[in-house]
Amino acid sequence: MSKGACGGFYGMGFIGAAYYYIIHAATFWLGVWGVIKAMFWPAILVYRLLMKI
Image 1 (tube, one colour):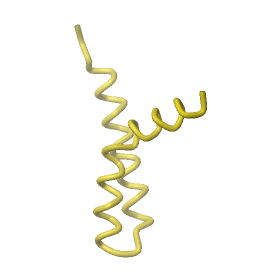
Image 2 (tube, helix red, strand yellow; image 1 turned 180 degrees about the horizontal axis):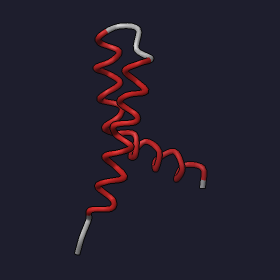
Image 3 (cartoon, one colour; image 1 turned 90 degrees about the vertical axis):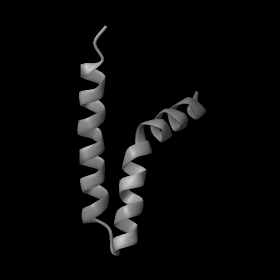
Image 4 (cartoon, helix red, strand yellow; image 1 turned 45 degrees about the vertical axis):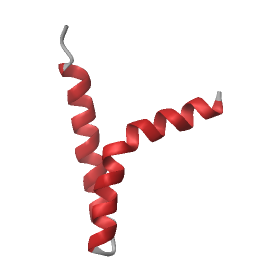
């Protein structure tokens, strides 16, 4: 069983989210916090979508 496609989508999403958060960060620590948020954004998205159901 191959998990390459899901890993690829997550990787592209992580890079895009990290880039977005870093370029919009006003300080170094907000950039670090943005990278942390970029790692967990899929879980937050699924949680919010399930709470609306």
